[in-house]
Image (cartoon, rainbow, N blue to C red; front, side, top):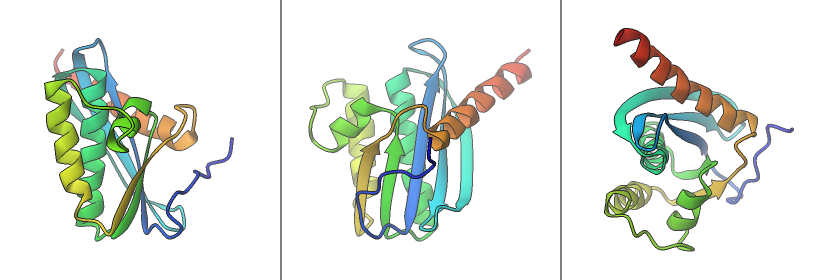
Length: 150
């Protein structure tokens, strides 16, 4: 599988790849994201635990964290790639958000996205190497927290 991701914007300056993980639904959860420059070079990555949460909440937290870091890095035109089809369809207006907890996160993501000249949300398969790497970062954060709590 190619590491190339279908780009929606012809000229993004940052690509953000996200994944959320929850061990149980709800259960211990984590969010992770990778940031790539326009050439596809990874410039930053982060994985962090969130406490107990659903998988959908973890996915939204990952997107929100990635947007905030892209803003700190001076991104103007960004694309967010995630394996969460639900989040992408909600953020693109195809699905309504019914869950009040997710609605609050949805609104935070929309607000964070407004600071950019353009921001798009794209669904990619979980098998994509970049998403698999974000998944590994989220799970590594969960593993580390579990080790520390023993």
